[in-house]
Length: 164
Image (cartoon, rainbow, N blue to C red; front, side, top):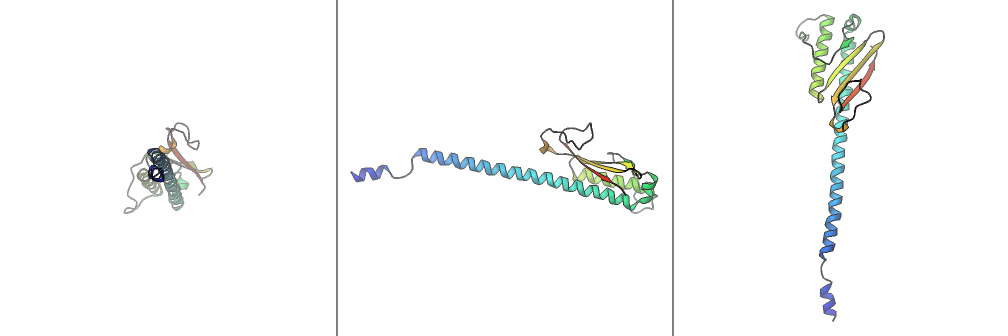
């Protein structure tokens, strides 16, 4: 009789195995969700870090060209990349240097940020507003409240005030 009881209790039942597989599956799905959320967070932080450095870049370029600031050459830099002289190999005026800075800066923005563009508005008296925009898919169709009106959804803006 004891032999019959022992033979019935050997091994796991199919129900126990099924429950174990389900519990393990939920755990693995949770781990995968955490990994994906972490990757998104890293991506967002990476783009914001680039935006911060690119803002510093144009501010440094402006500080280096005080004559261009005084002439008003940085008062309205648009999102389009202008044609400019090569001021590395050629001698340039303050206005040409400002155009060169604008072209170099927005070329870098386009290469470093998805759909990245930058603008600068202001004056030497009032100070300048530097705005960088880029597409951030992780926004889920939202509009960034830091962005000026009329920007597309999923557009992130990094806005900095600068006084030379």
